[in-house]
Image (cartoon, rainbow, N blue to C red; front, side):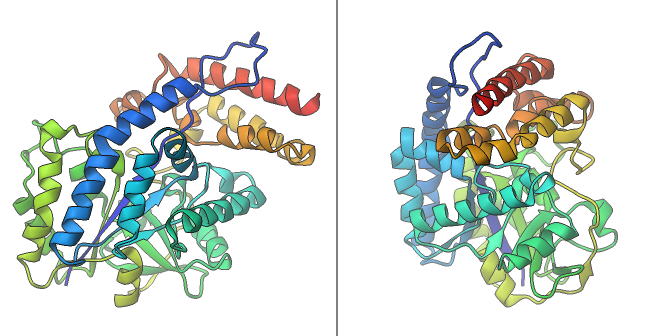
Length: 391
């Protein structure tokens, strides 16, 4: 049996406004632009895709099931500027066919710099999800699928039952991402791996006319899923939710593809759709997996170089987390919130200088003319924040 586990990542950062070192304002974030992006993505992706998913749940009497992870900063922006989006996610949660994961509230790299801050953000995110959707998360997904053995052990200590990671070739070797594994050094937590080839067929290659498999049809994709039978238990399809309607426009046929996919998958009686927790309950781990070094979903290397690959990124992150003791000692909620919003990993992704095999991806997601502009803008805001806390 091939259990298809769709997991959708929903995230929007608070983008910085163009901030000068001479700017006396303490307001670092571009509310006008952030509201504009939030409403645009709500109209192009969240509302139409949520309607489609709700229709599929009803059409197949709850047999179509899937999982979400929505960052705290994305939920905050939807609550402020697109409350109808929150309502539509809540309607999906009310069906009982949808699971919600937890992660860091601010989509941060905190685990790399401060375990205390990391723990606080995970707890805040879990409380936000439970308070908004009435579902207590049981599985953890770290920012950008950053993972190693230490993270699995730490998260197990926080009471989580599962953790997600990239099914990267260099850590799997001869093994397959279509099984569950036990992280080395843990007792009970389960490691769930992304099938990046099939996931990226939807997220990145779907509208690429130069791709040898173009056009991708629901029938063809269901056939690839069915080929897992006998070679695995699960097909973990982890994709950014904004793939639907935003990265892949409606005109590409992405919504029609998703609407017809369950029908094609269900034509094979051995296949079904499950949430990640249901998948864990049905499948036992086939062995241990040792991942001592940090991996992520990003780029050809699947490492941290998208966020820590140059001196600008390292300096910005180091200076940001150096402020933690002073920020927390100040006891100012707004100061703490601003500091934490500056932790969002997107700010450091914009500073990436990789313009080779992964260049197009970085340029697509970067609102700045250059990574150097991003670094200067970020450090101007951070310098003002430093002055606030010390004054």
